[in-house]
Amino acid sequence: MRYFPGQFITFEGIEGTGKSTHARRLFAFLEENGYPVLFTAEPGGTEVGNQIRSILLHPQTGGIDAITELFLFEASRREHVLQVIQPALQSGRIVLCVRFCDSTIAYQGYGRGLSIEMIQYLNRLATNDLMPDLTLLLDIDPEEGLRRSFHHTSPQELRFEEEFLKKKEILCSIRNGFFKIAAEEPKRFKVVSTIESKEVVFEKIKNCVLSVIQDKKRRNMS
Image 1 (cartoon, rainbow, N blue to C red):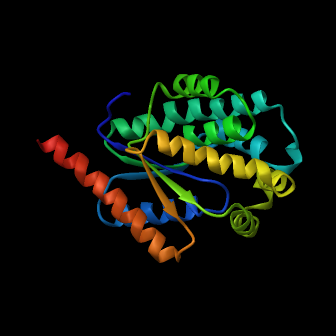
Image 2: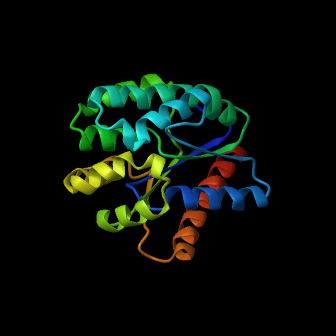
């Protein structure tokens, strides 16, 4: 794992947990309080990544071979890390990213049944071994998450939601996969239930992030 002056914070979870909503709100809060911060998301974040995103998320794409899907996510991630995330971390910024490597392990590994070891290898290759300092795993009941996601997501990005509506067992496997990943790295993960109000959830996220920021500041001063 490489060291960067900045901090890398990721938001993970199944559909409908409010990852983007809370990440954007946290971005606004940190920016207002004088922190150098960047918001980004996967797949996407670059010109190439955004084109790949349109392929992966558009319902008209339909079914994709699982390994082809995996390669598309990793290609987008490689460009994202090289062009956006790594330079921002090197400059000392706090990077807030909606989805990263853990999503690929949960979705393509636990959801699609691909080899976890293969995905981990490709993740390392795509990211130059970059790992988040903190991962916020937002959780919700899959049925409620799908309902929320259909209500808030652009119709051009509902490919996964439409699939999971027909195959809810896949979404349950993905959710359980996230829990397994978090259990393996308890120091990096913070699991936050989103069944409470947005205000309560955001306060938990904000306090957790500020604690991590202050902890790194203390370590750098010692």
